Image (cartoon, rainbow, N blue to C red):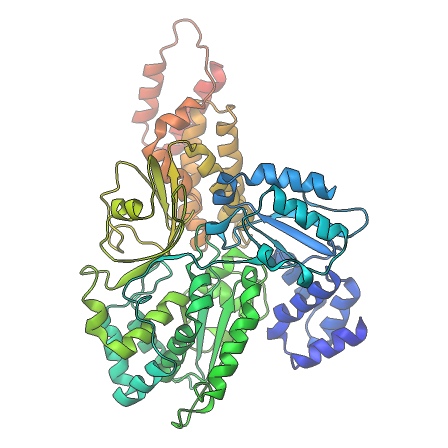
Length: 595
């Protein structure tokens, strides 16, 4: 072990910024990170062992106690649950003879849940030693358990177990017109970097991660910083349940994504870029490295790109299972080898990002679109969409529909049009933008896909009338409680309280004051949390409570009132109270006095 750790640290130049990559290698070799490895690594990297332990405890893919030689993780996303995940999980546990969350006595196998794996269009899905298992069913589980019991190496398992399809159903402006290798860079140098930035501004391109900040403005701000060292970061950590478009773009359009990053580097004057790839997409790592090597050989990355004296290269960094790292400042912290805790802002990454230097962070779809705009011009892109939302949006569509997969639509398209084309019928509602987004009912399908109406990073989960609204809110609320980074009290404690309060109501133990208390908790978590995770964690409850208050009320236990008690009068008193806390306390007291 000592020799392995020494060689590993040396291969990463003893840089603490490489800590996640080093820990991933140790975890892959030993199936956990032993204490002697932590102590040795702390000395080699010249950082405290407590810092390394903090990182290990922060990321769900790292462990300080042994896991199985075959570590099986099954996605606990709502879409997997809709496909029978829970019964399959119990079957897998029985077949493997290992409890969920435990390691088998012989140390060969371990089994646990994990958050969304980015395979929502081909679930139930899971991972074995980090590699994807799709379309899980009982015959596949029988095959997998047989292979494990034979202790057959994972790289000798049948390839069909790991088959991941693109499921590209509907293409549009971007997906229909992929650019040739080097085309965007040649166009940028021929036109000039400042005119190319003007074209991106003219296009109206806004960040495709959901927030919608103007791309050209972000790049311009970064380019104007006095600091000479700048960085480009591609956020490929799409951890939002129901989102998998970046997986497809990196599998089939990675050349164009890397081209967009390089165009950005030319505009802002960066020499180094990073692709932060979510840990669940380990299966794409070697393919992406090969594409980067081809680009270097073609003179599109390296010391003298296209003979223009332009220096830029891209490095791939793998995450380790932390939804919060999709937030740009948390991602930068992770890139630096730290826990992915969001930073206070300002300053923003464009002024102080990676290693304190000006940094542009955009997501996969944004860089892909920027490369196409560099070739085709701003007017080409701006001609499609709405006044405030130009171009197209690529959606990951899954759930109760006949054709789950990837769809590209012009902004301004109605939700009903999308539902018709993906084969959704008898629809109860749609979760737009994943758990952190908005649930819309079947009375709202005339609404439009646009920043000014329904903005989304790409997740589009469909639920038919056989689904239970409270089950959906329950799954999403548990997801946020699990994924909270723990940095701030409103989110760390608040998401746990939301989970417990919702469980109480869903399980039929709530009384009149509990729904009011639940809504009050939602507002506290939303208004006082440090970052976007906490600020949106209450959305599943708030958006469903707004549309289906009767469902929440129906779960409250029946109350027998004292003779002569006037409930209507008591409730009216609560409504007239100016202070929400007083009203909540009053309603809670009603429940206690009259159970």
